[in-house]
Length: 613
Image (cartoon, rainbow, N blue to C red):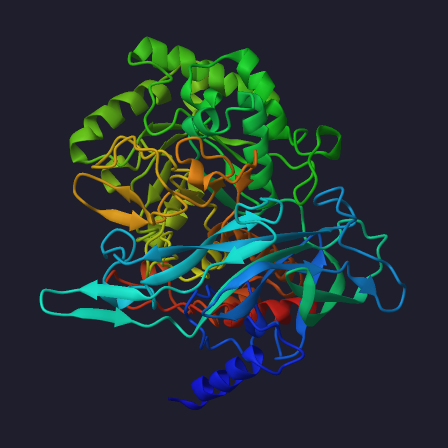
């Protein structure tokens, strides 16, 4: 037994007997930033004693106006679990002016800021994702790929369904029955229950900068069990509402129509758009306007999401990105035939799309998603359709053409925006593409080139992509799905309504390539197909992976602010401290070169915050 384990055993005995401070069920309480996943049974975590926001006694946070600080409180319990467990955080008070931030609980993400509390829901991974699609080889595999992994974040108001107060069950004895013997593995000695806190710092600069004090309380059975002091430095600088790079996330119409049956289609659209926008994500591709032929009435109805008027307080939106529209629009999705199949229809329909965007939304990056993941056999089809567009005598000739394939020399004159699942493999061609007005993006996740999207990925896999985009000047990261609750048509789970709160395997095809958590960064607040998983909330629920997408987007904005002060070269040098190599600089069999620890990114972030003070 090592020293730390011995110490915890002593703590456990004290907690069960004499300690007047800790509840009989609580062994330890500590905090960590958003850049780690603390598994349920990882009770010797390396960050427990000290990390970028926790000195062993106090939580220390720093941020800008209009920035969301996500962090975690880890409550370590004995094997008996806990009844009626919850946390609270007092509104932060400025130690000089007396200003109070964090909101009054009535306006989520209001001008004063807000505090959102969640419990962490765990998924048990016993069959880890294999290499090839999500990581190149075993050399670039995530560090820990089996166990009870936290991901879904359950709002505190999901009463009795994972919200507050929360019941944490006893750890289990595991019984293994063999032909000649019965083996019983005793209960784990302790277990973790994680809580997530989103502190939205005020967007209103009437609240004084400086030091704010708060306190987190852990409650058991209605009684205060532990308290953690919190110190927050609000820096006198503003995180832009606008994103200077994009995360494009697809979600399907099925998620809206089949799950939230108490709401109208437009209500669900707005709900999901708002949640994505607060996380600095463009939720694009799964709505009627993307999958239907051009309809001027539908486009005019959709226009507020493009010009930003949908994302205003007057329209019920609060939070980051107020008044800022989405940057991207896919005409068709995954090769949907919205332009028709003939030269005449493709030219006439493309005229309508281009004319509308040039008049009503000229700043939007719109494009025809002609075909998905084409092979060489489809090149003649691509060339034919592209030729019809580019020879169009009308405005439709200016319709950019997009597909999910890395740069191909044979397609350089017919595809305007390439998008490769191994990222950008030829950086010189990428620069030439951009000079010609084209572009090259990347999609999904593929270690070691960039962060992966699977459940087993490190928390920073979703954060690092914001840094990689800034380093290489890449415009967009595309994620194929965010609410793959109903499996698509592929594989043995084709069209199945999935148990996303209990079954980690969320994508599998007929080639039996599979990914745990792939396609799910949102979780449904309603579950009509599996009643035991219903959270009773007409809202889309976030995940630890979604929170780290937001962290990467916010980091990109911090890097952008730093570049205005010290220049691109020096900012690139800062990034290289945590991302020495990525994209075309590595091969699929290489180990991951970029840091997989949140603290390392926080160290650079602190350097930038000092620059902005």
